[in-house]
Image 1 (cartoon, helix red, strand yellow):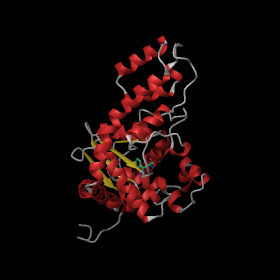
Image 2 (cartoon, protein in one colour; image 1 turned 90 degrees about the horizontal axis):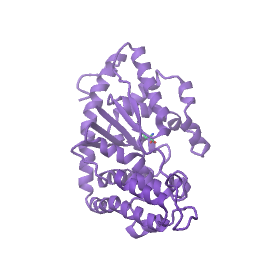
Image 3 (tube, protein in one colour; image 1 turned 90 degrees about the vertical axis):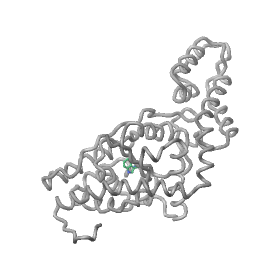
Image 4 (cartoon, helix red, strand yellow; image 1 turned 180 degrees about the vertical axis):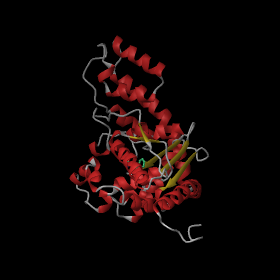
Length: 327
Ligand code: TRP
């Protein structure tokens, strides 16, 4: 099965990003053909500082590698290294009604938050559909907020195939990420815009301090506690093994355990995940050639698929190509 997802660089990643998306992406590499790309064309709709875009793009690659993306199992590449994607975007836009895009929630949300209503922002779902369809992807793991975009990609594949009576594009299926809601230190959804995040790459001590500041109720040590309404427990259960989670559940309900101890357990558990990634990250930062080579190889693999699919698309819609110009 071919699994594809795009990651839009947004700056410093937090535990919500890891548990909500990255972890599933990286796990998928074991059993699937995986293509993951850094959506830097999409980023142009919000970032117009070249140096910052370069930096953010590089950071996504480093962060994924630090958490165990294996370039021998999964392809990691920059969206912009596959320029055919923009060609397919145009072609899809000619078979897609404007009304479909006018219904996009994310466009309306972004404009409401003050992003400029550029054509790029409006056409964002067409570019995203091209990303997906150009690799004939089977499955696209995404968060809930992106499901509408995948449904639009399904529609666009249908519009193209029906219009040109062909099967050049394949209908993809969304796969919802498992940990849909990761709570932040205040109990609301963990999000950069709420300022309640647990960062992935801060120093161990600083991260521990943030974890110790998680809001809890004011039950005494002796009182029994409700694991289901506790942020510390919720985060622990996203990180620990089922047996460890069951044990903490038992101790909460029995009483005699304070939140301080639970937070310490959470901080220890988090460090077991974050510590090794932090170390790998430090190595990767010192080795930009390695990172670049990973991206180059990933793009090579992705582009060979994209070229083949585009040959079928051009053929289907009657775009002639002069011999040898697309070699
Ligand atoms: N829009 C996605 C997000 O913000 C990123 C993205 C771009 C993407 N192209 C994609 C995700 C294709 C999946 C497939 O998260």
